[in-house]
Amino acid sequence: MNKESRRKLTRREFLGVTKAAAVGGVIAAGVVGAAAGYFAGTGAAPAKTVTRTTTVTQAGAPTTITKTVEVPAAEKLKVGYVYVGPVGDFGWTYAHDQGRQWADQRFKNVESKYVESVPEAEVGGALESLIAEGAKLIFTTSFGYMDATAEFAEKNPDVYFVHISGYRSGAAGNAPENMSAAFAEFYQLYYLNGLAAGAVTETGVVGYVAAHPIPEVVRHINAFALGANYAYKKRTGKNIKCYVDWLFSWFDPGKTRTAAQALVEEKNADVLAFTEDSPTTLQVAQEYWEKGKRVWSLSHYSDMTQYGPDAHLTGQIVNWGPIYLDFYKMVATGTWQSVDIWTRIGDYLPWRWRLPVEKSTAGKPEGTVYLAPLNPAIPSEWQEEIKRRYEEMKELLFEPFSPEGNLGEPIRDQDGEVRIGPGERADHDMLWSMDWHVEYVETPLPR
Image (tube, rainbow, N blue to C red; front, side):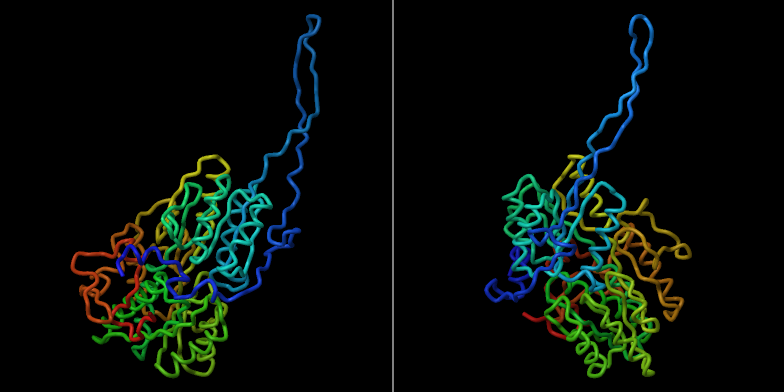
């Protein structure tokens, strides 16, 4: 399969699932529903009462006339969000809803609503209801929503659409100008998490609980394995082993618990990363700590420290708010541009310059993507390395998918084929269509 064909696969096609086989589900409104069920509107903003004073000349003498008039309030921008999971998942959907609230607080004159737990096959119903209720800007927040988003954008030229985690052209390559794409990318943070994992592992084995074998998740696994190997090999001279347990679900705490336990009990992993929208993996790691066994894990999308106060190592966190606020402003001011935003470390900061290690902001909220707090259990020399790489990535001085991120060695896949050679870095297209595992991942990639 060539690169171009890979990039045009929908998530459903990538997984080999047809619409007929799609799992049904209940679409639930995120707020008190209106008649349509999806998009509950509140009343328009009340008109303002304004006192106006005018001075006129009558019969040669100035006279002051005061009038009280009603001035219509500026029309609120109506914005709709479609979520693939529940807002209480503490992962992907929770982070999107926190971003929605962040943007609303700063824009003020906005009325935003969301629809949660919408199966990808049923997104059309949610979009129809949002449009019927007057939404002028709609965000769809799952890769599998891409086709429907492009179709509805074509049919509704007076509504603006932003698809999260896909690409602006849409799967068919013909998305109209009222559609944009955006993503807050984590592969750099996963590499830094890998450095932390490789610095603390005692078994030389790390595990990954993974949702679906799509490029987004694959590149995150690879970045984590590269970082873990870098630190572990520096420490011991040996390669790391990374095992993956696939869930084929974005949110399934039960399967996640089973997978996390299997990685510890059967593979001897003592650090667990994950792409699943609950804190379950971290909770499992904490339970091992309470039984006297050190197992580490991470935050994912939000700071989950509370779910594993002993086991929490660091993690990847997102603030979608600055991205959303950008689109609010474009629509409200009539300055819309069809764009493809792909934010990484350093984006949406007042400046992109790296800081000295001793002043690094690694572990502090900033921009759209940043590290969770670093556990003091990470040895000081590796905390310094994590901070140094974090700062270098702000200026793109360092990229994980390069020989520099692999101890100077070419990056090879599981078959030993060189994928990234000397002097090379993975570009956007390679990252966006990644369908191979680096050599340190022991588990085959499902096909």
